[in-house]
Image (cartoon, rainbow, N blue to C red):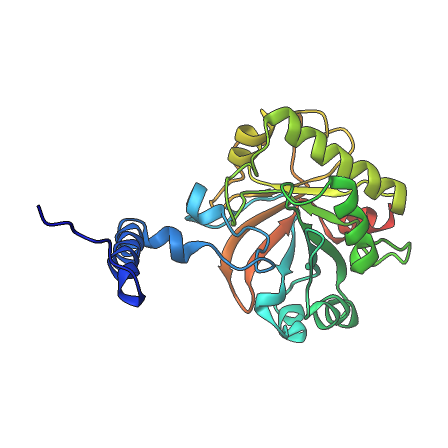
Length: 273
């Protein structure tokens, strides 16, 4: 009876390697978007997930109430034409300073100082990544890298940008109670470091899904709502009005445009504290 010996040597592993390569190719073919859609860490920006999750359409409906135009910018916009925005009526701006505890905006100086230099009231925001480090650690990182506050009448309190996770699970793998605890940790440390209550930027649908529509921050933290439509729609629990509203990601010059719920003196009042 013939005996078949097991192959050895360089050619022995070729069938196995080919099978592994074929499996990987098939997996990519089934899920090509998953492999290509995850952005690089640090590239997130305010409102990044709004269109994908909530859609968009329309601009703010005309109203007799006073509103003040603003913009928000981050590293992906690079050098911003601030005089152009000023001449178009923009009077306040927020600039991304940090993300997690691993990223600072390389265009921060031009964007943050540039808006101030043309006469705008400006502030900084932090893109939260609750799955990477604690809220307190991220608040410290934010304050230490441009997110502080000064009583100069032209600096708005920092903003916590808490929204869909562009790098993974929408709620960063946290339960509703866990997310609320993380947010509270950030806000408490920010207040301890600066003496100001941070603004919260979010979308109602994310807030409902990921915090259980928690109402506990409304009494102290101004709301910056994201909704690309003709009205702000339903607000998260606890807030009876929004302080700011991001209404589009396709406005002139920089894309992201916002309105403050009040005349310029109300923007000034928020800066003054």
